[in-house]
Image 1 (spheres, rainbow, N blue to C red):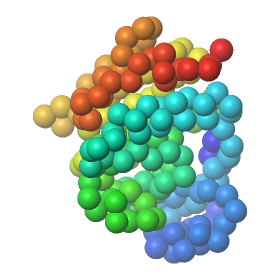
Image 2: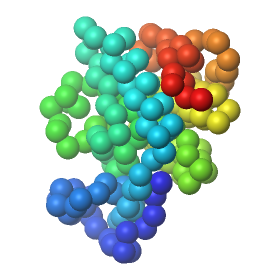
Image 3: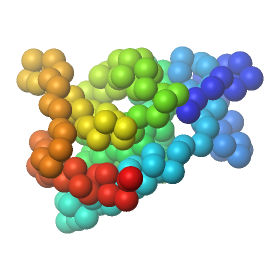
Image 4: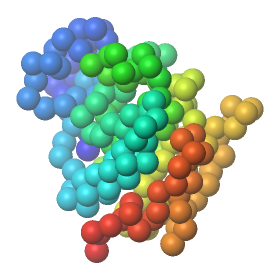
Amino acid sequence: MMQTAEHLRFSAEDFLVWEENQAGKHEFVAGEVFAMTGASQDHVVVSGNIFVGLKHRLRGTPCRAYVVDMKLRIETADAFFYPDVMVSCHPGDLKNQRFIEHPSLVIEVLSDSTTDYDRGGKFVAYRQIPSLQEYLIVDIAARRVECFRRTEGNDWLLHEYVGEVDCELTSLNICLSMADIFEDIQ
């Protein structure tokens, strides 16, 4: 879902100004800009299902779910990404209209073109976010959710959800059913 955009190089602030005037979305990593391409219908449906499930379960809490169009800034990685879904409970993020910096949960729905990056380089960058407690990778083809959970020792422990079980999100003290996540997917 990502390809290099004309080999443009920017500072983080210059990127933010430049992107405001672009028709499409772009991710930014260490001065390089990458154009985002469209997603498959199943990808959009699953991302939407997760967002709706989170939004309903987070009502009345200080946490807010974001889907697709909200940027995530990782200052230590000099990067801006567009996760499929993320949740922040940080009061500073509520005040920032341009991007989120303190998510507790980030979710990526895999596609053929992003699988390696979502599991590799992007996860390396996400692990630099001090507030991040869980990173979910959703595999539509396998009907599987991989939840990487930060431990007290700053290690990442994998919890795999398959079948009829609920996907437990301990960072938010909620669960999402696998049936809800994959609703309307053939």
